[in-house]
Length: 316
Length: 199
Image (cartoon, rainbow over all chains, first blue to last red; front, side, top):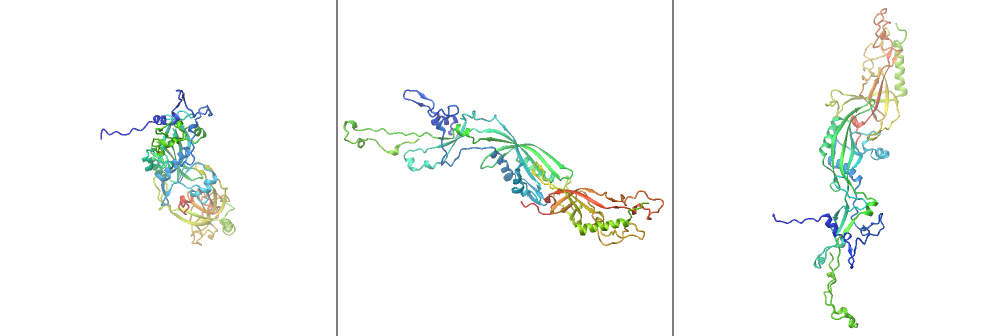
């Protein structure tokens, strides 16, 4: 077992060098065209038309991940994993969470399930707001937004147009492989301010314990995105104002290590989005018994001495 | 010796006030007081588990409503309202105390078994009042409306000329008319009186 050789995955550079857009064309006279697809139209004359691959009829859409997905990861994790609850009037009560300061009509009329008959907010509730987005340059970057060549390739496992059946195997036909290039994301640190409001300190204790337990783990939907979330401190206050209700509040900040891949026009124009493997046609050697010009009355195709099997084209 | 504000005068005003509040204005509210022995509190001084109440006691009251306010808080658009409830103090005294009975000297009530009228209730801060499907927590009680400026509970200056229980006794003059409760709106689900949350 010690001498077992495990396959070494190709580096990103090796993959990129295999793509047609990275291989310059060499003219018969030896001159090298750096890139024939450069049409000189782009913002600085380096727009590569070869990268303009259509996504029509493709069930995989260009990948993008925005701030909304980061925000949704938090509320998903809170509602489906942490599931904070309190005991109120002898009943286990689910604690609603919502993004702070929604539109008035929405919070009073549409999302009014945590309000009483008169419209007053019933505790406990958890609200959160994103307060800052800080760029993290310590992990990686796409180098330049004008020419984002630092990409990660994801190969499409199956394509209807290239079914790999026994016929293709017999004819040594290699199916066409498509890869999707996803630009290196912008790593950011998102800061959220949370406010937990309850009627009682005893209820607050339970919620803070639950939040603290979930801290430092990856928050989000396993089927979608997960981000590392950290909570460092909690500040609890009991507000008892004159002519007002007693309210227990806990404020804390949550730092989410997220990332962004926007779906901007700039990225769509400049970056490589979809790459196919090299397709090559190989013609077998053909010979003729006689030179056709010597006897034009004879159909030269009758004397082709090759295995002119059209299925022998090798599609790499 | 005081000249005005004898118990007969007080009785006149009591009858008029009671008739006015009960038969003419007829605003009512339900008054809840906590059962202190049964409602347990925790380390933080809060009854997070269950609350037990005495009542509700239906009382005639004069209500001064303020406008609804919708303050923008950290949690969003909230709701608040302050209401002032004024009670005739004699309505809140003990049930066996008849205020319309006088001794033969015309002094204040004698404590004779009466008509059973009286709520036997002392409004305090923290009590709950239900009014128009809303619950209000009392945060202030005011009891300083004295008829002719005298509170018979504190006569202080005993007239040395007239003997005690005589016409010169200041405890037979004036009256403490009302108890005013200032209250603010409180969520129904916090009190556990009615089901206000269905999710």
